[in-house]
Length: 344
Image 1 (tube, rainbow, N blue to C red):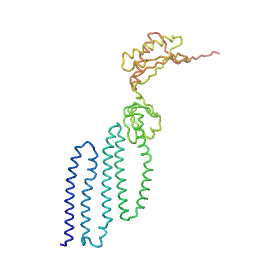
Image 2: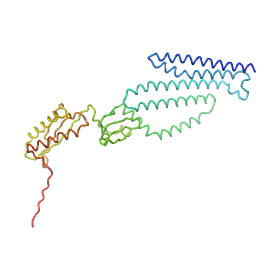
Image 3: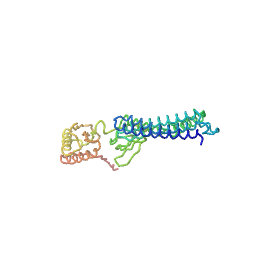
Image 4: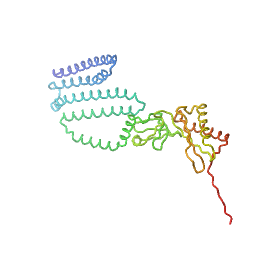
C-alpha cells in the first residue's frame, strides 16, 4: 500500500480520535453548564458542540485527501482551497444558526410564559423557523459565491418567491401584527366581557390570527385581529367589574313623584340587603326624568356587583316594583287608543 494512502488513513483516524476527545470535552462542559444559573453557557456549548466535532472530521478528511496520489487528477477540485473555505462557512453557519435558534427558544419562551395569551408562543416558534432559514440561506449563498457560482438567479428566484409569499400572506401577516398590537395595548384579556362592533360576549382566546368571543347564547364568534384593531371596543370588565344598571319606570299622571322616588330607593335598598347582585357603594340614585305623553318617567340607577349580572338585577328589581306598586295603588300606564264612532 502506498505510503501517502497510509498517511491519509492515519490522518482520518487521528481526526476521529480528536473528534471523540472533543465530544468528551463537550459532554463535560454540558454537565458543568447545568450547574450554573445562567443559560448562556448552555446555549454556547449546545451551539458549538456537534458542529465542531463534525468540522474536525471534515478537516481531517480534507487533509488526508491532500496527500499526493490519494485523489485522482480528474477529481483534484475536491482538495482545492475553495472546498476548505466552504467547509468553514458551512460549520460557521451551523454554529450561528444553532446559537440564534437557542437564544430565541430559551429567552423567547421565557418571555412568552409571562403573558396569558398563546400568540407570543407562536411568534417565538415563527421566529425560530425564520431565523433558521434566513441564516442557512445566507450561508448557502456564501458557499456558492466562494465556489464562484453565479447566485443572481437564486436571489431573483428568492425575491419573486418572497413577493408571492408576501402577497398571499398579506391578510395573515396583518392579523398576526393585529394580535401583537392587542397583546401590547391590552384592550381586553381572556375572560373579559366585551362588545366588539355588534358582537357581545366573553373573550375565550386571543390567538395570533384571530380572537374568539363566546356570546351569551354560548356561540363562538371568531374575529380576525386586523378587524379588532380598527373597531370600537367596549370592555365591561375595565377599569373594574362593576356595571351601572338603568331601570326605567313609568307611572300614571296624578301619582306623587316624591312617593315614587322614595319607593324606588326602598326597593333598591331591599335588593342590596337581600341579594348579592347590587353594590351599596356607589349608592343607587333615582331621577324624575320627564313628563311623557301618557306617563311620568323615572330612572333608577344601581351598580351591579359584576358585569355579567344585568338580567338578574333587572329581574329582582322589577319584581319588587310590580309588587310594591300594586300594594301602594300606583298605576303603571300602558299605551291606549281611544276610538270614537260618529253616528250620522
